Image (cartoon, rainbow over all chains, first blue to last red; front, side, top):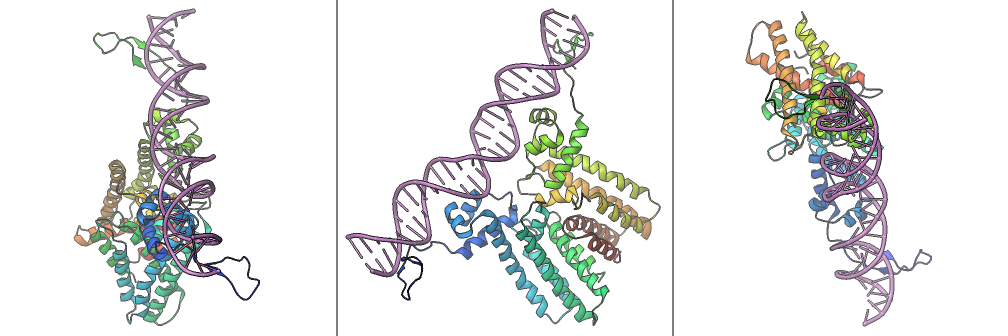
Length: 203
Length: 203
DNA sequence: CTCAATACTAAACGATTGTTTAGTTTAATT
DNA sequence: AATTAAACTAAACAATCGTTTAGTATTGAG
């Protein structure tokens, strides 16, 4: 919908309807996300995105502006998906046990068909370059901070009070979780289960 | 140096000397390794390699055959570098403490100028694709197996006997170390020190 | 000095990269 | 039906990718 008589100078605007989009932007972003997740930013080409998203380059550019913008939208969507299980953790009546369950859910989330996709964010961390876009870095930092905050809340819930010690445990758990998803791309499920169990022996 | 009279049928071979190489292959592989280490396989172009190695494409191809072969040589060289500190661990009179020191040495090895390069092998793990070369996968597996073996040896040294439990601790430590190097690319040194200290609380 | 083998330079190869553009189709309002 | 804005198709863009090739320079023995 757009104005056909230029800038709004009067109280009555004349409207003209144009052709409708044949795709849903939320749907195609989800498809792009899965491709970026598995292949990474650089190894995903516009050609691949066209095929996966089912729309052509013009549509991608008119909806998202650039490959980079589409990537950022994909990261945001991923964070949204993760925040679903993060909220479950937050709502749980358990403390540390709930964090452990969260690790298992996170591992499940990274499962692909016969292989592990890892965590989209930690995959992106590993692709980071000195010339990576600032807005991509922001997504990574915010993701990490969000999870740390919930871990901290749960640890305080279990241990009773805030302390430097508990803060450091939260830091430890965040990095363990990032390590978990990275490693899951190469090591089998049994080894990852063993990793989670050992990690929570320390807490 | 090559024979100029074909296959060796007689006792006397006629030799012809040709132009000498103006570069040392071991030296230029080291330079390639650093570039692959920082940028990854796909994000390193032949143009960058020419510049970094100080020789041109023809020389790279005549010495190594392809970009992929050069990458594999780079991985081998990296393993050689890591095996230096792995041997220190093996030779140490300490047990678990020596493994912890190994973690710190590994962290130091991944330090770049003002940023962390991570571990070349774990960076490569994260770039793995369903169409990644088998020989690249082999390098990763061998690297992982080598370290596990030394960790296991040290754990047995400290705990006195072999057991399923000790084997699982070795598995845990390998994945922790991979996680360590991945995370070091994004998190600061204090957080990584905290990670190492917490990890060895469990062992 | 000649010869043959190899190292080198530099240009070119076709394929693919992300992005843009020209031209056509669809839609609802006038 | 005419109009107009936006969605679409498809081709083209310059730049870069990994790899190859043609031509020249260097080597040391015969």
